[in-house]
Length: 372
Image (cartoon, rainbow, N blue to C red; front, side, top):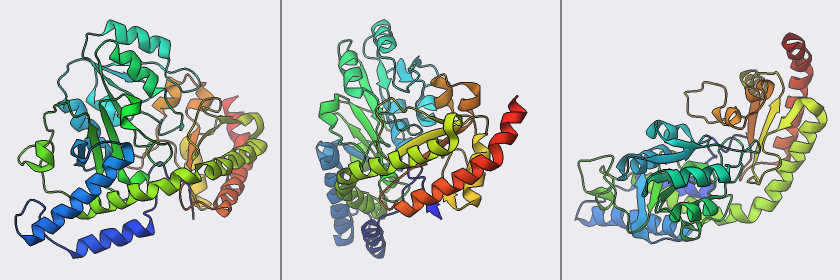
């Protein structure tokens, strides 16, 4: 198959797989004082140093978690605040953790509305918590996070960002962004599934979400997943190669976009086309053809893509991101996310184009007639 769903999870890189398998041959609890424990601890701390260097922080600022969702929940549930501000396009793990948050709207191009954000930041009490993602997982649109953080600083607010989809696609500098907390996940950059990290400002205190042990500097109880952490460390070291390859990946994505638009004409709508986007992501809607129909048809043709976030046990549902962008009804329920990565080849792109061409020819007339 042509695998084009890297925003859901990237295939594990060979060097990462080798490191994980080697780590699984060893044993020892990182909290044990004997030699086996000390060796395990050393591997954990080497990986912690690599993750820290990846975003320009000290190793003591890195807290390993089971993934991006837990990192988001650890921060949002553990920070000392009762007032939250998020955007309307956040990942469900952020929305679920902040059900009563003030929501910053987005413009039709998918970028947060900074004028509305400025009003909200002024209205909420000082020391509120702001959580806005750096890159949207469905559209690939890059958010003006540094500008938002500067606005929040004027009112003494704390800023967290879910940077899961930015890692390996944009250079990330924790201090330059001006945030106090950041979420990362290994499996988006060719690392193992089930391991992530929460990056914290040194001055920030947090009540642990998981209690019952002193691991992770008393910030996350539970025996560390040593093999996955080792893989995470290797993945972030390899992410520099991904960053260098982004211009080429952007050319590949743009070629795909051009070819699909040539097939679909006005029926093919590129979401976020006129906003800054990461180079690996294309969100395309085929008017009046439900997302689920497209995903299944592409799968049967040997092309793996998705309709958005892969966090609903395989379910395909209308995108809250596209609704927040005020997309027309014939577009909002018809979004398809195609995401490229480190092992994407030109042949994968060509196969995607041919599969989508067959889908368009087979379904567009039927659905347009039904919509009329």
